[in-house]
Length: 206
Image (cartoon, helix red, strand yellow):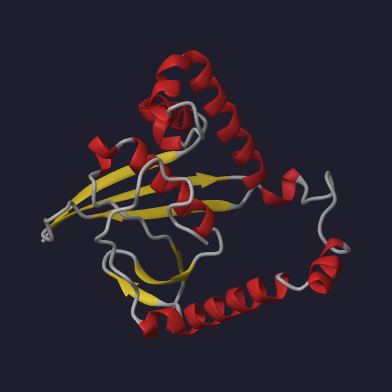
């Protein structure tokens, strides 16, 4: 719940805050991304990105901050996802609910078969705006088609190979702490592209 929990330095003091309406409804419209809402994985991912930004301020800038959202078809779906996720988080705080969930969650080895998930698709879009520059934006996209279980294994294996091949550099950048994807640099990007990830970038000028 704390965006800078893993940060290597103090957070910037200029982070804009959400309006009360955004906090209540969850959804919003973002240029080049469309309608988005609360992301279930956002709480974990945001802390990792902020660790990267504080480990490498020369790349991210001292005022960098990151937000993550889930793309949805329309505002109504965005509202439903936000409310459902909020209620779910509150219910998980109750011991009886956690006990009940343990009876139904997948045991190790009992997840979906590989054949059933071969048509899965993962797609992340990102928009970055330079500090003090509102007329230029960078759009990035990463896609992967296939089993998400397989993809998780690929990410771990390729990350391990990068660390093994350049341990001293990675240790220096990560300062001996938690290694994030960004601290592994272009080598990690190159390896992911070789195992099926498609990474694209564009520059938009307004």
